[in-house]
Amino acid sequence: MGIISKIREWISRMLSKSDIKGVYGIDIAVTDSMIRAIDKWDRMYAGNAAPKGVHSLRLEHAVVREFANTAINEMALKVSNDKLDAIMKNALENLNKNLQRGLATGAMIIKPLGADKVQYVPQSQFIPVEYDVNGRLIKVIFPEIKRMGDNDYRIRLEYHALDYEKGLTITNRAFRSNDGVSLGAEIPLTAVAEWAELIPKIAYPLMLRPSFGYYVNPIDNTVDGSHSGVSVFAGAEEVIRKADIQFGRLDWEFESGERAIDVDEAVLKPVTDPFTGKKRAEMPKLNERLFRGVNVSAGTSGDFYHEFSPQLRQADFIAGLEEYKREIEFAVGLSYGDISNPQTVDKTATEIKSSKQRKFDTVTAIQNNLRVCLEDLCYSLAFYNGLTQSGYELSVNFEDSILADDETKRASDRQDVSMGIMPLWEYRMKWYGEDEETAKKMTSDSTAEVIE
Image (cartoon, rainbow, N blue to C red):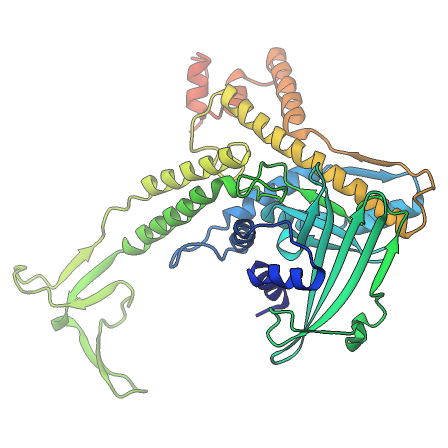
């Protein structure tokens, strides 16, 4: 089991609550039901939550990738202080892929490691202790696990506690564990070379904001009603499972429908396997996958060959799979066609615009929460670099291309139609999803010929 899996297991164990209580005398701000939900979302994202015997389509991955790409691909970030600007841009080089994990698990933390490096921590790998009334995470524990040998682990707990009046306090404590799950006995930080330079406890009375950037999905938590983040695909879990099962049906339809020819054993040639010495029957110079040896001559008027070639029903299975995908798109806030095939369903212009508006609203909410995260991250990096009083300004801008680009392109195409540059039927094909024949019929273009 990998170290990341150990961290997940440690956090997901019910015993971890009592471990934290015993070490710090505090309760953690996450319920058992939320712990299980976060673990499930993490496994879904990794493709490890499909029912037994069912292949995962990894639709969860497609959902979070689409949201992450749309949210930040056109993000423009600028800090007025050149040094801080360079640090921030370097820290955010891997924002996209880490945001995907945050979207999947419900939240993530971007934690500075000194003055110019950061660490991305998804919700499945940190322990929330306390949120303020606005849902900002102000107390949190970051576990780190090192495997030293068989049945020999070292666990470090880094506890960040922010008090809006007294400032920030960070404590580090280390433990020796036999299984990497239970804490075991406490040991000095110097017992592990990588931790030897860490300070057991340090206070920053002037730090009155979180010492990291905290991103949380803009989704109401109906799991336990807490401030913990909820996965972007939480509302589509059951439909995702059905889509995986439906794909299994489609896959089986192709596999079970493979053409085969049943051949009477009387016409098969007996041969001896040169390696095992065992005898077997085979059809010389023919495809082993195509022919099957059975006793078919009885009652078949002496026929030695029967073809097995059932009619495939793939169209029905594909249609069902695409419908599940569209239900997922609706449930999570994506546009139709983001993960489904946009050509498999007729949609009106109003439906298309409505689905794009739905995605726009979801992405905008994600961007707003991400902006808060980046503002706190920038402040924490400024703090560690002694630049909080430098008068720096952070600008984070997101382009609204989901709606703006399409509306602009559509207006441009309408102008081309009015000028005679683009035929009206081509406009209908592009914006109404019609095929060429239908588009020409709808525009009553009787003089145009359908291109075969």
